Amino acid sequence: MKRNIAISVALILALMSASTAFAAQNTVPVSSLQPAVQLEKPQLTGVGGKLIFSDSPETFSAPGAFYRDTAEGEFRVFWHHQNAAEHTLTVGVAVTNTSGEPINLSSKGSGLGTNIYVDVAGQTALADFMRTQDKKQFLADLVPGETYYFTAPTDSNITNSGLVQFIASTKKGNHPAQVTVTTLSYDVKPIHPELAAILPGDSLTRGTFPHFDRVGTIRYNTSTGNGYLSIDSDAVGPWKGNEMPGEYEEGWDAVDGKTVINNGNYGVMYRLSTEIINSYHHPSQVSLYLNPAGGYGHYAVKWNKEIFQSEYLSYENAWNIVNFKLNPNGGEYKSEMSLTGGSSGPQVIYFTNQPK
Image (cartoon, rainbow, N blue to C red; front, top):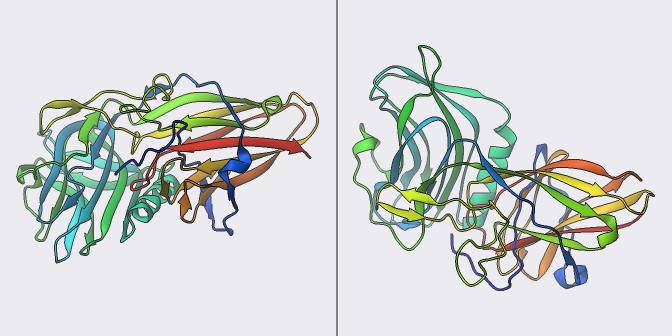
């Protein structure tokens, strides 16, 4: 995904829920939310298993593997690839049992989107992942050498974006089991995807990262007025320095043998508590907005067990995701966020409030 960077304050998000809201999009010029005070950056901690990230080559024209590495126990795979061939190819991920004993393979969240618009494919994958992430689903029993595929036919000029959290465990003893993960495209399903030739990479990123989640606490006081916070800000480049402490981890490209950074933390879920202090001590309405500063995209957001999905959103506007009543004593809220595949960042979230 290409990151079109225009201004220094950055962010994006995807707050989640059990159902999906498709109400008419309410947007305002982002200038109407300014001036705003930057909120204190929370300390983030990486938790969860490995993240296998596949975005190189982002555009391909021949079948082959995009990235390959081993994983064990619980891990997440994110991929984002566009078919530039003149015919349909199947794109996705193959998980091969290379542990030497029978294993169980399950998922804890899965989403896959195909669309001519790269950011719509990413939005679909993220929203579906959020709908299913709280329920463990059995996928397959795999004997040594056997493979499970999670793929979709992908027409010419279509982007395939996917997000799946797998759990691999031994059938005997239920211990973490090792598997080989291959993101790939094919016209004929390979018998041994773990041996398929890997396509040359491009300027984008592929790699394996230590943790697939970040946890932390956002704090907003109504006395602040309009406040903003950057999430998925740049880890490298001219705007480096706006990221949150602990937000980024160095990864390893198992194909090309080099260290890498997942700039934007695609595939990483931000599982954040939001503490709102009501200094006015009377009921207020708090509003949450999303602005893709410097870019554009389609976004998915979960708040109070409801998934909201945006229409097309540009850097000039802010999307009013949700309005909610804050009691005189304030409150604590849970949110989950992630940068959608294909969206162009950075992005910023805004909190505003007014008497109720």
